[in-house]
Image (cartoon, rainbow, N blue to C red):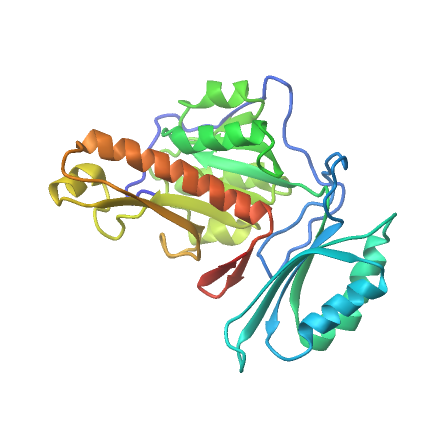
Length: 334
């Protein structure tokens, strides 16, 4: 995010529905907040079960101690579950934190609430776990904030339309109209919420009204406004941001021109969860590309766009695939 917010001359918002009339879909039951990943999973949107690879994913974080894996696997075995994927990590075998991501398969129908309640009582309570379970077919709804740069938005829309993001993109909200046609053409509703001078509070209130109860993940695809701590506290969902990895160097305008003047040899991007501290949230994904003196500032900017869109898309996919567990100021990524 830029440290110099841009403004729009128009003071009122405008919404344009998608060409296929898709708009925000409300969950069929209230979202439940997960202390493990910071998400509010939607249990109302499900996908076709053809090609089902697993029945559910289980994410766990707790104090490390002997017997955790045995207890979890024993619980699943007693219910006839076949563990098809499992990853674990301990920050320290003595007094550290333990993290587990596992996928399991169950034949036949499952009483989900009974399963969840049993795990909570028999396992989670016993080990003091933060945990989350997500069933096959449960898709989170994603809203995107964007300004004028199109590369990150286009990458997300392209991957979504190809079925590479396990989510439903329900809306794009922007403080400019530049990307309205591309958004609507992709089948996503577009909402124009300008940020007039001294009108940031009103704009954030309008965005909160659009987002309330309608999404589980917010993605900042080069949204060039700084979100307030009040907005982040009230929005009720994690937010993922992308920025070039020059920071804290070359902040502000023309970072690539100044990077070329300094003869940088690497250009990168960082995707992270958004916190009130600007560009300081837990990092999800990063990447770098080597450059040299022969490349112009325009060449460097093109390289930067490429790495930004790829890193953001990877970070969003990792979050949607339940591969990220927040551990304080860092993340565990399986």
